Length: 150
Image 1 (cartoon, one colour):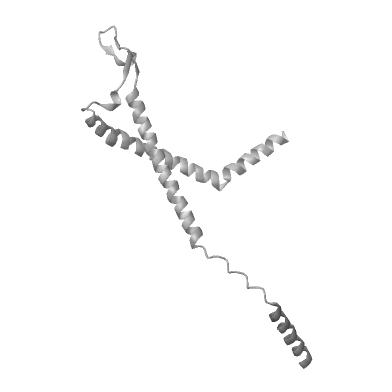
Image 2 (cartoon, rainbow, N blue to C red; image 1 turned 90 degrees about the vertical axis):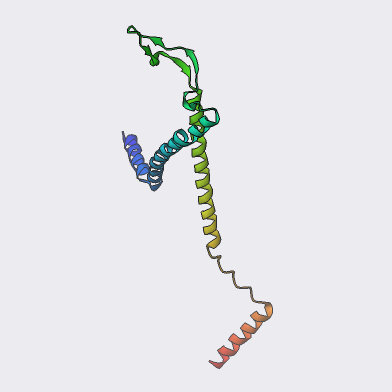
C-alpha cells in the first residue's frame, strides 16, 4: 500500500509541473488550430481543387463497393452504401500537411528566436592576461620597497 501512496504522490507532482501545464495549453490550442486548418482545407482549398477537376465535389470522390439499397418504403437509404471515400481521405492528408507545415514554421521561428537570443547574450569578459615574468618581478620589487618604507 505504501508503494501506491508514493505512486499517487509522484503522479500529483507530475501533473503540477509546469511542463504538463504547457503541454495542456498546447493541446487545447492545437485542437483549435486543427479546426481552423480543417476549415481551410474543406472551405478554401478543396473547392479550388474541385474547380480544377471540372467542378467535381472532391469530398464525394469514392469507390462504391456496394450500392445503397431501398428500404421497405421504397426510399433509398444512403447508410446502406459501402464505399471507399478516398476524396475525404485526400482532404484529411491535405489537412495534415497544412498542420505539419504550420508546426514546422513555428518551430523554425522559435529556433531562430532562440539562436538570436544566444547571439545577443553578452559574452563573458576574457580573463586578464597572465603577467609576464618581468611584470611579476617588478611587482615583487614594488612590494618589498613598500614593506621597507613601513
